[in-house]
Length: 255
Image (cartoon, rainbow, N blue to C red; front, side, top):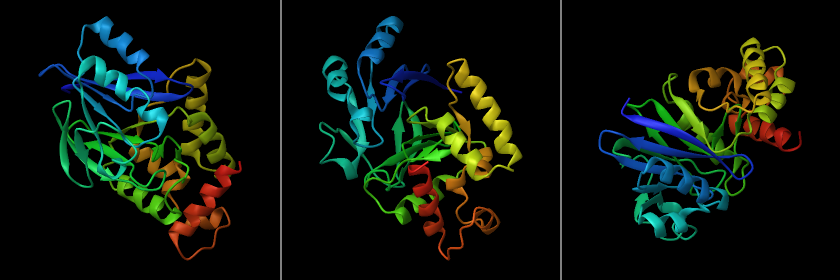
């Protein structure tokens, strides 16, 4: 792989991703909620910062933008749909177009729900997805700005990606997500195995990221709202997958 992906912890449970393409010496950062840990890391490596990339406008994903731009004169790539909410965008990312991030061909998916303008970034050749706050390990983002139907449609876009895709999401919410999933779907053996591994990692203070999309399709209830056998097993009898999705999302909000 041409690309090195460095996970940097920030704020209380955010993940910032620093991407380094050694071949052409391009360095990019995805969702810098704060600047300090990025500056420290770059100083240590003697790297410059070429690009800042945002998935959505929430402060814990863009809080470091302006400081980093000022220091490194980086180019800011962000969703065209959030241009009123994110200042200083140089390059707009819009749905289903291909752009370059750290010199890597990247497909943009518009995934409204958590925010109306949220986008995710998929690197086919690198087999990785930066899902922001749309898809989490065993979870999905809270639906703040969009509708349940929009969020479900957004998750379907991500679910359609290849099984061997590694997902890098915006937060370390995995253990609390796993507890909810376990409560909802107690007989799922693949989930049980994942849960044990997650607990073990978190007890040692280690990250659970990235996670495999293929396995996720079998254990994340938010990706299974159109599977009748599953929705029946948890007592949901809706005609529409997005209603089932909404019911599961509501249960998680109140869990």
